[in-house]
Amino acid sequence: MPRTQAKARSAAPPPPSRLVDAPGSAVPVDPEEVDADVPAAIGQALEEVLAGRLTRAGVLESRFAEELAARVARFTRDGGKRTRSQLLWWAMRACGGSDKATAAAALRIGAALELLQTCALVHDDVMDGSALRRGRPALHAEVRDACGGAVPASRAARFGEVAAVLAGDLALAWADDVVADAPLAPWTVAVVREVWSDMRTEMVAGQFLDLHGQLTGSRSPSQALRAAHLKSALYSVERPLALGAAVAGADGRTVRALCSAGRCVGIAFQLRDDLGDAFGDPLHTGKGCGGDIREGKPTYLAALAVARAEAAADRPALEVLQRSLGDADLTDAGLDEVREVLVRTGARAAVEAKIERLSAQGLRHFDGAVLDAYPADRLRRLLTALAAHPYADPPPAPSPPTAAATRSDTEGDGR
Image (tube, rainbow, N blue to C red; front, side, top):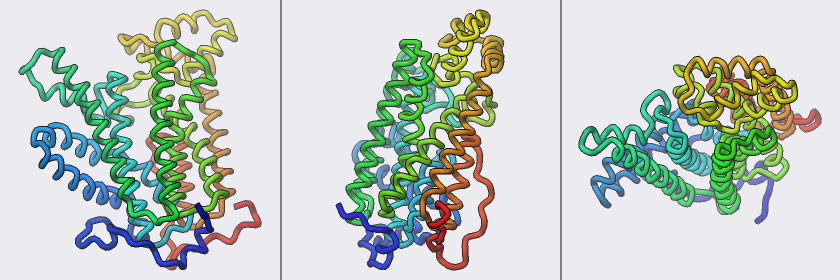
């Protein structure tokens, strides 16, 4: 497929867009309007998508629509900070996406990313047995509790789990439909669909490695990083950047720089999330603390603690880790013991240092790309915040330029 520079294409007339042409569409497609509040624009795109899907579900079967499809829609609407779709949007803008048709496509695929996130989280909560998500009951727990006393507790719990699996499947099906129907320019369709396909497979592979590590009790730092790369770094950061660049029709050099940046920042993001699970505040994270430890997840933090305790022949530390990692009934006092070992072995400090190195490396890759100045600054701030803390907001952004952003003339200094 021919690939040309975004700048050269910008003068060409945009391809037709059903979002642009659709009468009464609630989705804002003016790029500068969306720039002012990307999460709100993604939310509006989601509303349009979900309204159509719920209507079709209701025509198909009312109980299915009310008890399953509506829960999928509510879970997706109540999502977090729309980080993945923001990454997609600002990558598209930084790569020169400036027309209404491109903006419409980016919003639609951003909405699909939010549905894919619903699939991942709902399934993850079932696999991990997590009762909370975003400070409220996980979807499987909500379905279980809705049964009340009408059926035995064990049957209600089982029904909640299988219903949540179906809910995740439904969210994935909707996400795929949205991508398939996105108003993409002809020269971007194949690239976008390839990135989307790869991302879905990578998610499953990463989740499988995570579960396999729990089964075997693997404590290999290198394997833990591999799982973090597949399960989180690609899906959470690198692939959303690649999708945004693909929608804009970016050249190969730009795509490679953004993907390299996303890979480093994405791993840093996951490592910071691992620290948050062990040391974070549930009021801030929206989920229980110590879940990874109680489930015996093969995190890099845990693997490093074991490796360092073994190297130092620290028997007390090894005993704490061996009896605590994977103990579903671990008490708060036991969790405090593990935290103390994570600090004493230097595992926490080592992970913090690795996060800093990965973050700096990722930003160096990012700075090597030639991007439009204003959206590139917004994207850089977002990446910096992700590496600094998984729940952090990016620093306040400067006001957008009065004129449309132009490609930065800094090729000579490495950007």
